[in-house]
Amino acid sequence: MDAFELAVADALTGKGWDVFVPHKDRGVDLVVLPSLKEANAVRIQVKGSRTYSDKFQGWYRFDWARVSEGTDITDFWVFVCLVPSKKGMFHPQFVVLPPAELASRIEQYYQQRKDRIDFYLTEFDLAGERHLIDDRGLSRSKVRAGRVAIGSDHPRNYSRFWSGRVKDVWSQLPATRQGP
Image (cartoon, rainbow, N blue to C red; front, top):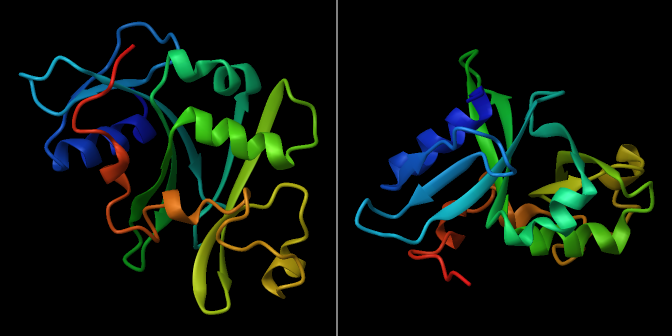
């Protein structure tokens, strides 16, 4: 278990979930249950990054097949970024979304090779609001200046899945998973 998986496990146990770690990695990093009496597990894939600034700015690399074909294996992907606080500590921020949502968004704008995805999530202040955008291939100065139109419904905008903007990003995990 790495620090990013531990950060997710800590956040989920704080919400009352029971967290388990598979012995062998087969595309699922954590298995969580709403309670030990609940038999329907939620399977989570975790990707982590250090930050490249004093805000959320993470770089994630993963195989396209794990996203596009992974809906049978994983229920949620969680991207973790350890963001520095004013006290010199780091606090984790999370982006939580189902693999089908991630695949749909990437399909709409990702033009590079599809076997490997390089995903750059960067926090921007746009018109007085904080947004989290996959800015891979975009000019950051143009995004900041508002010369690249990325509204809240744009596929590159991940703000509604981000703990830095949404009060309880974990609320999208079901109380019980609807299994096949």
